[in-house]
Length: 64
Image (cartoon, rainbow, N blue to C red):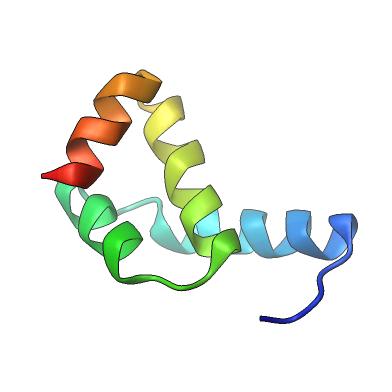
């Protein structure tokens, strides 16, 4: 995994978040499960939080 600076990680997070925004909740959960990228996973979690999911609900969605 590349060694990201905090700024580079935030830029990657924002770009990835923008790219994922149109996915359904279930699509996001599936993409989270199959991803090895921490930035990708962080973007998915951020989107789900913005959609009103709690940490518990996010965990349940991802564990399905």
